[in-house]
Length: 112
Length: 388
Image (cartoon, rainbow over all chains, first blue to last red; front, side, top):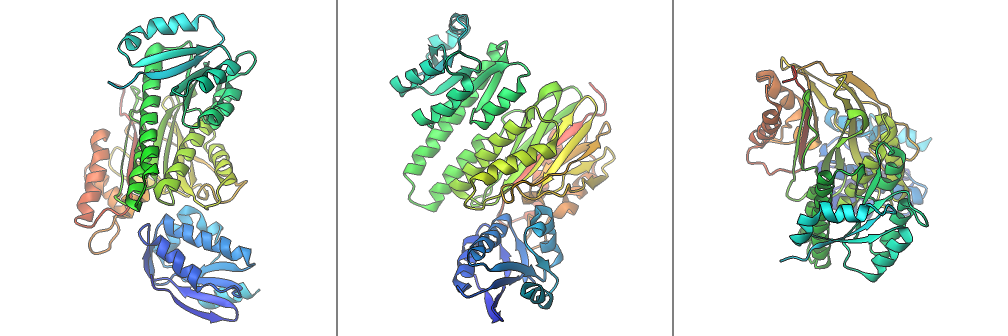
């Protein structure tokens, strides 16, 4: 699974593509783990290009948030399309993972 | 011929032994069952240590020296694969709940109905056979595919084989597993005062760990549902217990509902699951509002809200998993709740057994040649127009 990544002031920004389901959730997890450095203060997942995420994919996001927590780093997501937002809302994940409308707003929130 | 199933009966009542042997004599003679007896928990543990061939334990709760609940805690230390069924006083929901939470597979109530007891014994033995087969295969695991087979057997073994029946309602449900991804299950339970508990759930991962998580969820739900008429409190209890020992951050979305056939009232709590669909007799339908719950196993000490709706005669509620609404066709369109609602809008069902199958057919017809990517589960509860 391809992850497009860049860094901005200690925040790793990763763009997820197409879909994450049971078949490629492990790949998604490996790609995220490989991208994260010990020095990262936060991970922002940009989900604009994501068309579908299954519960296995949500679990990867959660595991990644846990891993980051151990190095005192935060995780947030941004730019959710309506179907993805609905998946976050129905599962209750919108109450566990901070969601922001855009990268700019997410970066401001992560800095504070 | 397979050897008879060895069942250890633990009860301090001296009458039970001759009664059991008498009522089960045909099955004993046919070589299906072999009974051993103990009169308290201490004696039972001795028998279990002496005889590693014992398959299941059937135990009373109140006994001298060591009671049934303490025995339940001790059994796994002797053999974790023994399954226990508890005999309790009718209506003693507190003890039954404790027993279920301590890993009892099922329970029967006093006075013992031997026909019902036989059904319960056979279900337990069937589960045990599937469980052993799964364990044996697991030992031989060489590839992921094998592991998925094991998981799928465990998944199938916990689904109910039959549903409670009543003159004023009908319940039908089934689950079609996807080839590689799986995590759906459902349960339908008869509760006290004629109420019925319904659960539809989806575990976040696949494979054996997810199947084990599924089995814990099912057992905890059963335990929490008994003697608790507040679905929000049921989810709260299960959430806390699942969270206790969840290093792998697995989670399960659960829709749990209690139906009272006498009044038509349905109370439900939604733990991060797809909202059920209420279908009226004219084919119109509405999604039942979410109750602000999060998927179970993630965050401890959460309060789960609940909501209720009264079914008018002719109304039905469709409980489903995302395998239904997120089924995709070749153009990557989702079946959606619109697809589900359209089934009933076109022709309001008069027979819900057929309607439940029609949902599966509609999903397959929509998906066409696209491989099924997730388990599909659908359970319907129908309040009949009039009692036959």
